[in-house]
Length: 151
Image (cartoon, rainbow, N blue to C red; front, side, top):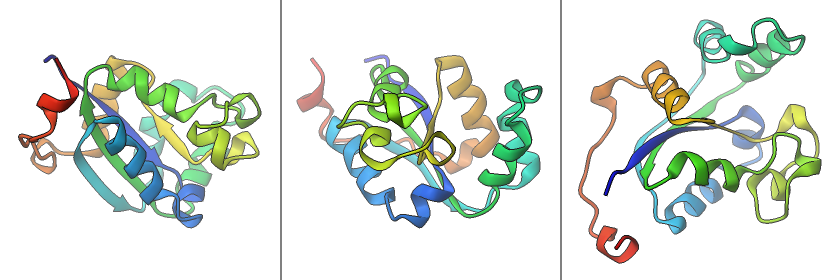
């Protein structure tokens, strides 16, 4: 099975509103494997690099400031099509466009407080994982449930 990895971060509003456990639970229920996890206060330097592609957008400085305003939970999840599926599980960036059953559809009201970040491509996942985690912080482990999830 060609498993991929994605980067998922529970934003400060999600941490403060105690949504971390349910987010982890939904990824686990889906069948994805958690290989990296840390609660941290992200530095503005890390966040500027993470959101570099948005540096010329009007919301960039506000986003960096917001993301550094409280703790975030940074995670790496592994599984088949995890990037694409993770995006579907999150819902649209604007919660008003997100369906019920998605994180943003269930937990959010406005775009500025949309609970979760997830990589939008395999390439961005690789870049984001390398920004937030050292290779030694990722736990490659054999799960006993894979044979019950994949053909």
